[in-house]
Amino acid sequence: MMRKVLLSKIHQATVTHCDLDYVGSITIDADLLRATGMRPSECVLIADINNGNRFETYIFEGEAGSGVIGLNGAAARLAQVGDQLIICSFGLMDESELDNHQPRVVVCDKHNGIQRRLTYTTTLSEPAELGL
Image (cartoon, rainbow, N blue to C red; front, side, top):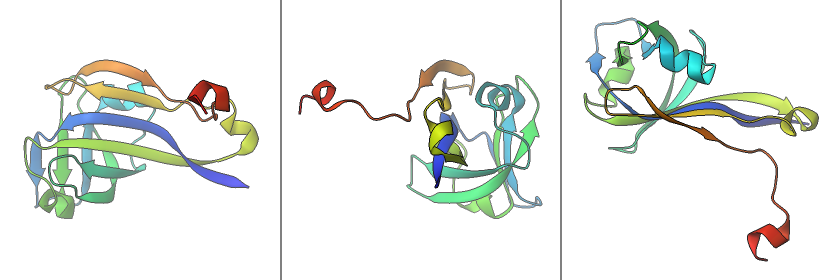
């Protein structure tokens, strides 16, 4: 059986521009893409922390070090400059792959630089560890 799991996440990225007159997608600073393993043209789920909108689009690579997080085309109607986003990529894995998988997660600072890196797990804790 295959499971859909989180591959990577960019947390608290700040929207730097919205461009309705664009073909579509989200433009993301290449440094953030490298840190998370996200790739140009990859499908991502975006959640706007400010207004609750959730939508899918695909990635365009932005200039490294620019801090760009730009919503283009129809996606530009779903957020505003200054909104904070959660950007997630997902993949399918079988049980054996899950045992060693750790999603790559970064939290952004106010300029969309990497403030910190987080480690998530895909394994369940033992009941005693949860106080059950």
